[in-house]
Image 1: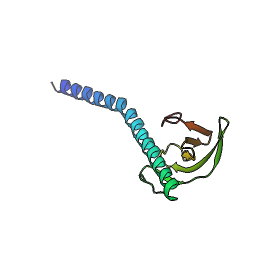
Image 2: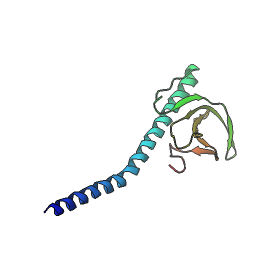
Image 3: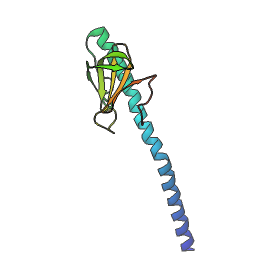
Image 4: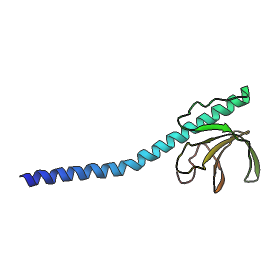
Length: 126
């Protein structure tokens, strides 16, 4: 009788662990996607404020740090001038930046190069 109860408890614990291991990667991806979405929105709002008032505020400091970023990049034959960038939105690598340009184009910048982002897509590997 005791052995049967112990076996049932072990089986129940194994099921709980398997469910946790199955759901945890989705939770992590959702958390990264949420931070990325908030960063997209915060950059867009800050760029609009900068354009209209000449200054900006960061509406989501818990997700990212926004600062002026005036680098130029040649992406697919187009010269793009950045106005603002956000870092620390993702702690996978310390060199990831999400930037917005004067023409409201988002760029993902890492140590491998610059990628133009379309329709708030996720960066490669996310």
